[in-house]
Amino acid sequence: MIRKKSDKGDLEMRRGTFLLIGLVVVLALVYAGFELFATAERANEMVLADDDTFIIVEDNIINTDVQPPQTPPDPMQNKEVVIETVSNLIKVQPTFDFTQNFDQFEAIEDIHIEILEEPVDLPPPVYWVDEMPEFPGGEEAWNEYLRKELRYPEVCRTLGITGVVQIEFVVERDGAISNIRVLEPVYRDLDAEAVRVISASPKWKAGKQMGKAVRVFYQIPIRFSLN
Image 1 (cartoon, rainbow, N blue to C red):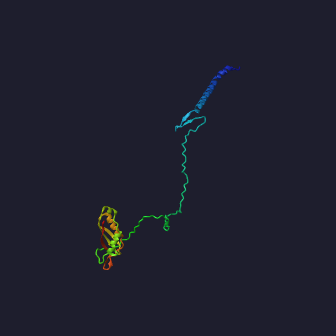
Image 2: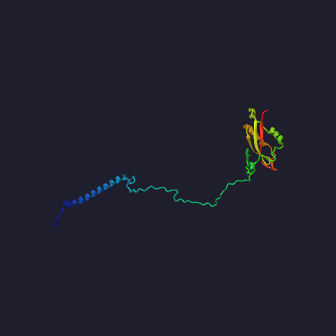
Image 3: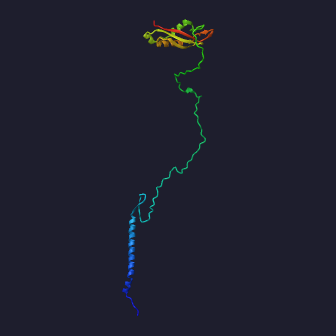
């Protein structure tokens, strides 16, 4: 005789299986819900990197590796430097043409050029010789020269200054007058006029010693008087 099971008994036997399957499905749904929620939250999450940089995390994968700042290349680096050596240098010397015509320049007046001659060893002048120096024409010509050339200083004429200026000078071997000095001064203007007259006189007859011209000291008074 064959035993038959009822449908209700079968369901009771399979209830554990259905319960297990339902639990698995529920857990799967719960897990899927958590993953979906976490993904939505990460879409707007801001992550602070090690170098204080904020990064927005999106759905796709973002590389959060922070690259170091790029330093701009040095414009002088890896630049070719060309050094040229100049060998054909020309050294210019300043030149001056001494042959040019100086007449083109303006004349400069009032320039006194004194040519210093080398000193000549002359014998010392003497006071006494065989033939004393003499003004050309003698004493009379000398007095005439003084009357003609002597100028009485105006200030001395106004102040009434008179006197005799004693002058000493040297008659050179050629008759020229040199080394004029005032032995006995009277007044500055009178002394200067006496020196001027002596220096302007023509050459004298030179003094001689044993027939040879020598240098001779000569003293002469110059009188200034008002008549």
